Length: 397
Image 1 (cartoon, rainbow, N blue to C red):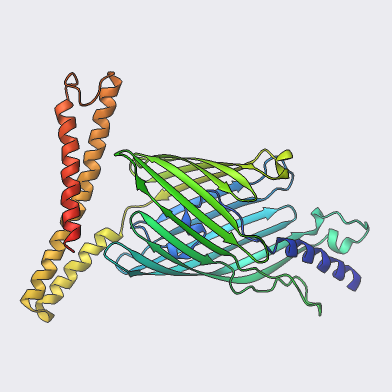
Image 2 (image 1 turned 90 degrees about the vertical axis):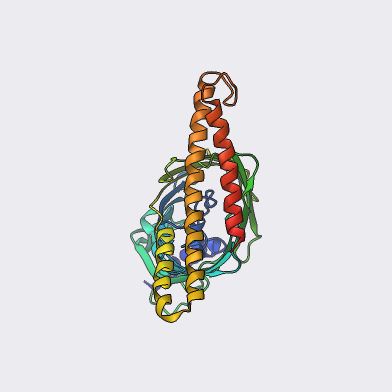
């Protein structure tokens, strides 16, 4: 029996020591769901987002990696904090990694337009090895071929995330405690353990024209003792609801991405295809990744105004009249900015609709032959005026 246990330990050491360099799955669509690689992203938006990412790696190869994750994250209604969590399954041949984790993030104001978020994550992982799927060189040892072994391990990670409306820089370290993976209660010292991973990513969105934005990004991944891997990517966004992108992952693959977001901002669909650049391309048809997410109604913006109102009520007893007046002015300024944001969104939708109508007739929307040309041109002018007024109000803060 001890001989059989020793063989199993050796097999597990090989499986996990070779995988120790990179135990976490890759994601090609991390740009669309940065929460997957950094817990500090929780609460950076004014709404909750639920997303599922499904990655089918190396299509055409038996027992190739399959990764599925369901995540959710969003803000507190009145406090500068965020919450999130995920459940996941990562299966490769006879080995699997499943679990769940929860996250908490706190956001600090750095300037009027930038914030820093610090996040923590914690959860449980279950590593499993199905011996019935393993063929040994020496047949006849049923101790491993008929066994399914598993280990339950606590796991923790942390991250930091600096962000503005257009830019972000993040660093995260999953599995930083490096807990041991123990499958058997024996005196043999296990060499298998969780390995800390280091992720650094950054991106910026550039406004190229009224309808088009370009967002380049970079992601550096490293786990001892491997060579760091870098993803260079960029996506082109059309009218905030349609995008296409490409990425290059060193030592691995090229990625091609497509995505669509419904115009009410409620649903988002993304697809990516990875073309391997290594020798595995001789046997694989590439990697497919599908993402579907849903966004819920903003809860933070509404609460932000109600919170200011509450402070104004308290001011009657604790603040001077001058302080009370300042709070009211700030409240009115905030309300006006929110109204301008909504007006800008409605006006852009109207202009896009008029442009579509004109193009259907084979006309330029500003052409005098188009019966709604004046309305179209006035809409363009209104959008410019809204932008100028919004910038003026934001600079007063």
